[in-house]
Length: 283
Image (cartoon, rainbow, N blue to C red):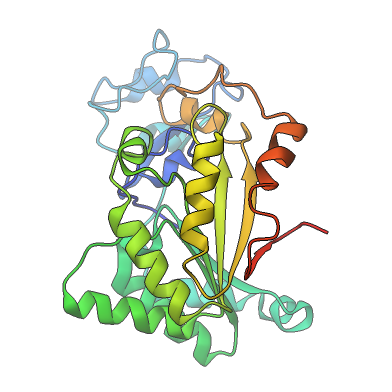
């Protein structure tokens, strides 16, 4: 499940529709018939055929009239407010698959810690039902002592923590992600020391941003401080590119080239043989 709301703004984000914590309007130009119905019925004058993104998000009040009347379903509201009970009931519909396959529930986003109390409550419910639970996080979390206690309890209850380490240099992290990484690395160290067997660090490998020898040496130095660690390298892709147009935004990295496999392999060599570190997916 994907929770909306994220304090980060990674330039390569492949779920940009999950950054805004509120529902938002989405428009698919591929589906649009250019019939003009949305423009005719919009009381806010937010819809226009001359707008390539169709909707002026500053004027739109999310009334949903255009969504209801669009004959091609080119317009839709992204995100909805749901109760804990509604989420659990929906997830339970697939219970047979979890129990037979050994799979379970992954809470992602957005940033699950952005909705800490709700995420914590979900995890407790799912564990009472006997489900395997993972949560996917950037580790960016700033709260009071009670929030910190909840975070540790959350980490203790889940079966798997998918933890992104995006850029090791804090200034560079702020430039490309929107925030410094001090808190992220502090939380990574705490959770890595307490739960080394349930945490999987993931490094999104972005060309020209975090793919230098120095980047990987800094990553190696951080991992070497932990008793043991699992790491998965996630090469850059463009699978989320179309989502930016969907929500009326431009994708800043559209011209960024994909990484060559030999470059990826050469960078991984820096991590091979590091005591206690396992590269997931490597033979």
